Amino acid sequence: MLNGKIALVTGGARGIGRAIALKLASQGADIAILDAGSLELSEQTAEEIRGLGVRAFAARCDITDYDQVTAAVAQVKEALGGVDILVNNAGITRDKLALRMTPEDFDAVLSVNLKGTFLMIKALYADFMRRRSGRIINIASISGLMGNAGQANYSASKAGVVGLTKTIARELASRNITCNAIAPGFIETPMTASMNQDALEEACKSIPLRRMGKPEDVANLAAFLASDDAGYITGSVINVDGGFFMR
Image (cartoon, rainbow, N blue to C red; front, side):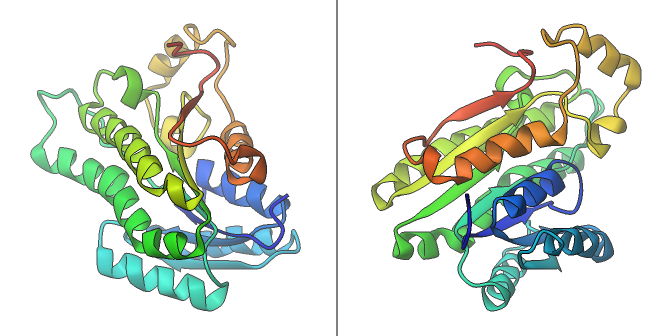
């Protein structure tokens, strides 16, 4: 259980982030949601979380802007207290073949998915060190492990998240702080709903479990990694992909 813990989830208004926020709340954690999208949508998720008997806070934040990140983290601390669990879930896609991908497409995805993850960790790094405890959970992707046609920017950003995860795990391990990554495969979210459905159906044929995953499948693992039971796991990248990518 996560009673008394405070978790900050980026991109927590919908999809995988929302499922993680609700799962951690069901385990007793108070939840802060930072999302660059609609504050109304974030507040709806926060209200659902409060219905589980814990506290919730929601704010808009562009995680690519360090001033906004530090200001939002300060708001979270004022509203809920110090952060025990950081879940870096926020991410975007701008899929195109590399030939047609603009430099702006590449920069935008790297900025949110990789730089944003770094800035969130940086904003809480000293707090975690002072407290000598903490859990950092980064949402990567199997695209960052195996590559995916049309996702040069997304795959590169998620591969970077893997490298960042391992580095932060090494830097903070002596302070009893863990940092792990979850690499989802094809999960039923608004992001995958916008993808080519024929391509998705074809991809499902290559999944040993023969189906897409649900956001709750990722959330269940996040809850474990956030718990005391995962205290001896750090620097790991764990796939949630129905067996799609086996190494």
